[in-house]
Picture 1 (cartoon, one colour):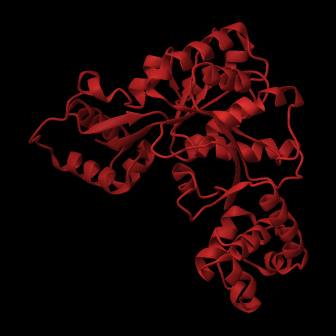
Picture 2 (cartoon, one colour):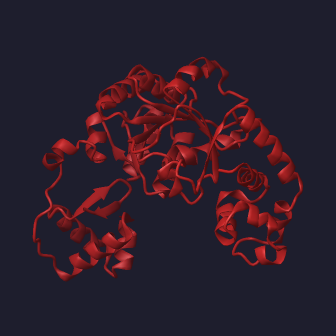
Length: 367
C-alpha cells in the first residue's frame, strides 16, 4: 500500500464512533479511504447508517495528525500492515463483516494455503486441560496447522508453547499495541514466537490492554481460523465469547467435555449441550470434522452416490444449500417453506445419500 493511502486508512481507523463496519461502508461508497476525507459532507450523510454524529468525528482534524504519528512508528519499526482489500490480508478474516480494516503484524507469519485453528480457554488451566492441549497439538503436527491463540495465561500460552515444541507456526492475537506486552511474564516467549509465526493486532502501537480490548480482539481469534477449539472454560468466560463469535461467522466450534462437577468444564459442557460446539475427545475428531485426512477421507464419510434420485423436497433443499452454502436448520426450513420436523427428516435422508454434511451449531452444507 502506498504511504499516502495508508495514512488515510489510519485516519479512518482512528476516527471515533466509526468502527470497522461503517468504515467498510464508507470505503465501498467512496472507493478509497482518501476519497472519504475528500467527499462532500452532505453526500456522506446519505450513506445508510452514516449520520451527522459519525461525520463530525470523521472530519476531526486530529485524525490525520495522529495518523501521521502512527505512520512514522510503522515505518521506523518496519511493522507489516494488511489492509482488508489487499491480498496479504488473512483470507478467512475477509469474510467477517466486522473484521478490522487494517491489522498490524510482526514476526514471520505465512497464512497462504494453511490450515488454521484457534485454541482458547480458561486462564486457570488444570492438568487435564494442559495434557489435552499438549497431546492435541502434538497429534495434529503431521497436518502442519497454524495454532492461533490470545497469548494470555492458561490455555492460550499452553497452546503457543505446544506449537513451538512441535515446530508449528503459532500466532498470538494481541489486545494492545506493539509497545506494550501483556502479560509481561510471557514476553520471554515473544522472540521464539516471532521466529515461528508472530503477532497480530488491530490496535495502534501505544494502546494498552484495556478490558474491552480483549473482547474486541476475540473477533480476530475467531475469524482468522477455520475452527475454534475450547479446551476448558467456566460457565462464563472470554473463550465462550470467542465461541459465539465463531458461530456467528459460521465457523466450526469444538469443545472438550469434562465431568459435570468440574467448574472449568461447565462452559464446554454447555456449548456441547446447546449444540453450539461439536464434542471432541482427541485430535482424530478434529481431523475428521474438518476433513483434513484427505487420503482416507472416503473411508470416514458417507460416499456421495452417483446418479442419486431426489424427491421434490430433497431437491429444493439441495438447491438452496448449493446456492447459499452453510445454513442453519431453521433458515433452511423457512427458506424452503417446509416445517422443521420434515426438514430434519429430509436432511437426515440427504446425509445418508451422501448429499449433505451436518456441521456444529445445527449447520448443514451440500457436499
